[in-house]
Every structure is written in structure tokens, then in C-alpha cells.
Length: 132
Image (cartoon, rainbow, N blue to C red; front, top):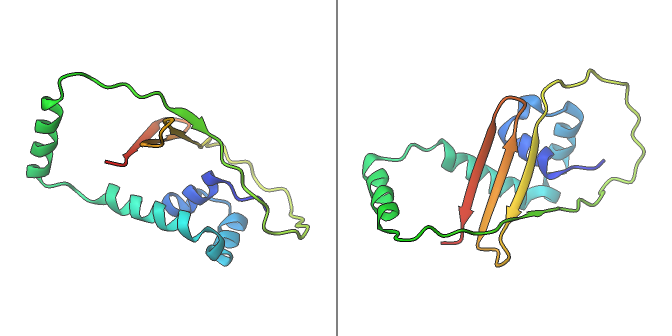
């Protein structure tokens, strides 16, 4: 079975929208995806945490001190997923999922910045990460 980056993202963030077959496969083979799952779970915890007002003030002050806007060119990163199951799996045709969800990863040439773009059928979410 081929498990994509999107499948692992769905496993952590939107379990109810991931096909049961893929959910069970990732759960059974969690050792193979341990680093990615751990990273995404930490991200989910950070996104869920509310920031206190003094942190927002520090962020606003830091932004206001920047004199020139900096632009970084991000290029799409294509991940290659290797198949870890060589067994043939046959399944009945399931209902099609009408919600379209895509995830893309972008990085700059020095790998200082990473952007994750999650596109839903009705909205987009952008997550930015910096080494700083």
C-alpha cells in the first residue's frame, strides 16, 4: 500500500476523513512513519495552544522593528514514498469522497523555511516554519 504525506497528515489532523484501510495500515505500521507522525503531532499541539497576550505583543514588536520586507523563494518539494507492503490487496469499490484535500510542501534553497499548504474544497490553510 502506498502511504503519502497527505495520508500521514490526515492520520494526525483529520482521522475521521482518512479511509479506514489507510488508517489501519498506518496504525499497524506506525514504526515506519514514527518521525513524521511525531512531527505532525507536535505541530498539532502547538497549533492548538493559545498564546498569551504578552507573546502577541512581542511578536507585534518584532514585526514592527523589521525595516525591509524579506522575500524568500520557496520551491515545491516532491516526496517519494516507497512501498513497504508487497502483498496484493483487493478491496471492494467504496464511496467516493467528495471533499478534495491536497497538501503541498515548499522549501527555500537553503532549507531555512518550510511552508505547508493544505487545500480543502472550501478553504486553504498555510503553515510556515522557520529554523530561527
